[in-house]
Length: 201
Length: 207
Ligand SMILES: [Zn+2]
Ligand SMILES: [Zn+2]
Image: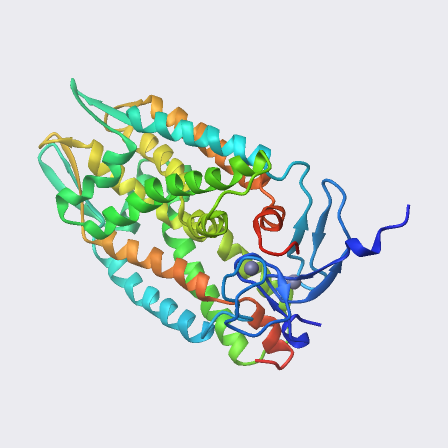
């Protein structure tokens, strides 16, 4: 039996279950309670689709320009990974590839799959879907690596025409993608997977 | 030995909402959801004091981090260096204030606020006192914690060191080691903290 099915609500702030109505204050921490996140499906869809849309310019536009010996070269996220591969820095290339490509893309795909399966009332693979949800929660913020990296490189490599790294607009887009996917994951309510499978959506 | 029945508490799973009647756990025991496997409760040997001490260490290391350079670079005699905060604010010079805000909040502001707010609640609590505003502050700690990304930042530092080694001589600063220590302390503090035990002590009802 779920808390909701019994007329109980688990406080989203402190976790105490109590027999009160939506929007009433939790008896323990006084925060207003809600049995499910508000408009979770709509909000998660909106944030996920926005992230997916911005993922395009984040990859098309360069994230930085590397000036070396007077030559300037703009690099996109993928070009940055390829440059690491060419320099035989395989482990590094793998880290950046996973953090900058696999994680944000995987997050968008997992969220869409979870949303669609909930809306179609799918009753199977409940535990597997929870694993996907937890993967997304655990690794979601690692896509920030590229943003931190570009800011560090731009701060350190400032030696005029000899060597300079300048940030480009792609960082802004990529930052927006990361923030949107983080908010999307927060807006998603995993309890809906179980509600939907039991016909209580 | 028979369990004391009054110690049974009602717990709803945060991931699937299934209600469980939970017996009181022994030290080190973990209770998992029967349906989805989520961890419902974990009994820590010392829910407050250890977390308070580790958070204090993290805060002291954070102060050290800010007084020393994080990374330095030497290329043909020309040197540059950066601190954590300089790195966060650098892109302002390029007009990219959105990125500045993102980096500043996730690598500096939120971790700092998280440590301060936790200490404000936990330190007096370790001495058996509940400070005014403890409820609000502990709620704030819950809001800040997912947005502090020192661990990810540390990975970025490693990637930068390896990547730049090709170009010039990289000089890891004092702050890198302090930041590494900070990461260990704050991660351990997160594992040591028993949220439910704190809520029980600072909450309005003993639930
Ligand atoms: Zn509460
Ligand atoms: Zn569960």
